[in-house]
Length: 162
Length: 162
DNA sequence: CAATCTATAGTTAGCTC
DNA sequence: CGAGCTAACTATAGATT
Image 1 (cartoon, rainbow over the protein chains, first blue to last red):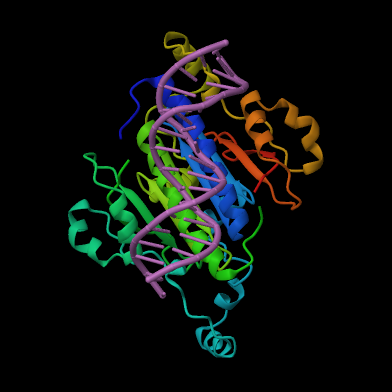
Image 2 (cartoon, rainbow over the protein chains, first blue to last red):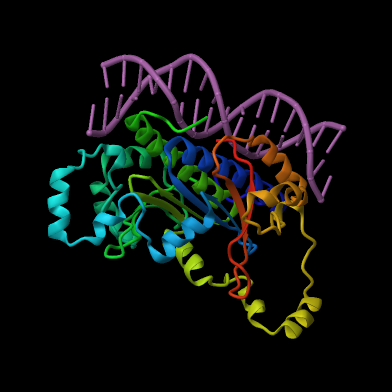
């Protein structure tokens, strides 16, 4: 799978696929009560986006790393105070599906072979589906902590199929 | 279609659908030579993202509205200078697939009935597929101009199916 | 908790008009 | 230039292990 050579076909596909992604993003937001943003920049220097509940909401999360309304309060408390509250209302243990995908943050392709072994198994599984391609571009998954204190764009590279 | 009631199922779906979207975003980036970013915030206050070539690239475009390398130069020139250059290298006429989706920027639902008629036909077609749901949330498409001088998050609301 | 399977549902590339 | 179609492809909800 590679870049569509014909420019017209490429642009038509760009448009069609974008709507497909927006539709899926919309579905995700409804089914899972999530906030989702999608940004698409064509090389022709046009940009489009989808956002739920709005692209502004997503933008603000990225720009200002606003704590979410449902748990931000705790994070504003001192660590000791937060700990004691957490004892009263303990967090449920986390399932694999809600774990951060990875804690790797390397950006150099050379580092991949060893570091990639540290990926969580379910990511490896998915990553295996996305087989190597010749190009140097990469597929990135990242976990974004929403408190200002933590790195908001922690990133992991895996091999990319498309 | 509505929010999945069971929390476990909801989280599993969140995880599965996210990967599906990432896969499609990856495909889009390769086929169409585009830069794509996806941000997912679960209500459990976790956030994940996909980015091609990296989420950092997308983040920087949003944060700093960096002009793209392939056409940003022109936009930094004075209008008069730009005009004269554009005469020498005229832009090709645009197809429907590369037009900004809309030039509507309203945020009030009350304004929709009249304004929505201005949407391009292919957007109307898509929008019609996304039928009303009871909730007040909305599906947003937006066009993002990449020069600092223009509104980077111009937005249009249409009805949402999911 | 995590992986795997599968029937069903959904998507789209290329085509026609 | 856009809209519509559909065969082939792809994704996924729910079940199973």
